Length: 349
Image (cartoon, rainbow, N blue to C red; front, side, top):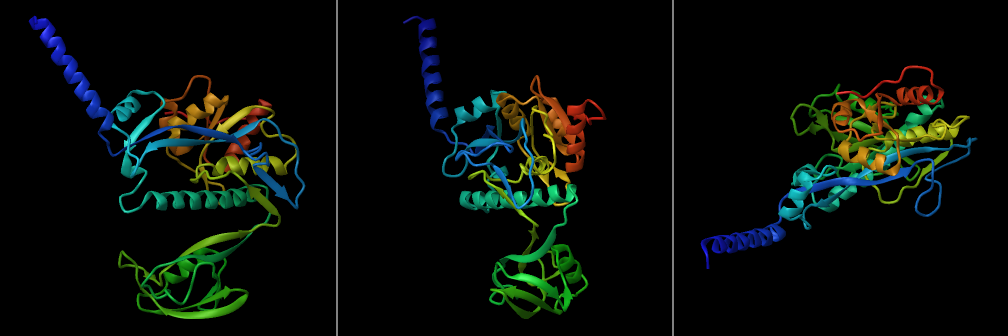
């Protein structure tokens, strides 16, 4: 055998060995890819309106207000191999990130899924509150116990679902009121919580302890604001998780409750978390979401301010980026876009 033939044979063997290693060697990374998009003005996979409003007059809408998602491969129990990771690093529509950015080391995949589901539920409620706030429709709030920490003073006295109505005799209607009142106490003080369970008012007097930082008095409950809406808004999107569809939910609700379609038939997509007062927050996977939107047919993409720099540097051809700082800003921008009048904030680096 000639030296050249021997060298080629050895190289072929090495390539084959490396290929075998790469195909079986699992790595702690996750590949993020463009996921499905859904039109908040359309129907879900069961043919039902994705957003349904009962008890309030609604108006015809048209066009698209799509929220976008990211899908992934990898994670604990199903890690990707080295070759998959390498292909992802080279692909233009895939981001390969360390596994613990998606699955924290102290949480199981099941816990992550549960948190994403809960985040989506919270996002829907915030979106409804933000939309009604934008339209000037009154919304009332109440404080409920979302969780009780084991071994803390509240353990055994309070439970999830209890509605907190007063702290030390003072009425409370928001979590911020409770935390503000608690901050006036010292660690070791006793506080009295008035709460409702199964329609009955009860009280619990608990001695506060230090939080993990050792600086704040707590009793060991996780509180959440719940909103009482004057009519029913139902959002049905299946098992999609995460909070990033909040802005698009709010826009769809505003569109349905006001005369004239906000899109004027245009294909608009976007992303962003939403607070009850309408502030738009950043999200992850902006590049994959823009690609998903453009592939679906979108020509306009609403982008949170804090994602603009990354988005502008990876914008797909044919997709116009509009910066959305708040829900009100997004509504004004879409009105200006469809009417041709007014200023539209661009999303730049």
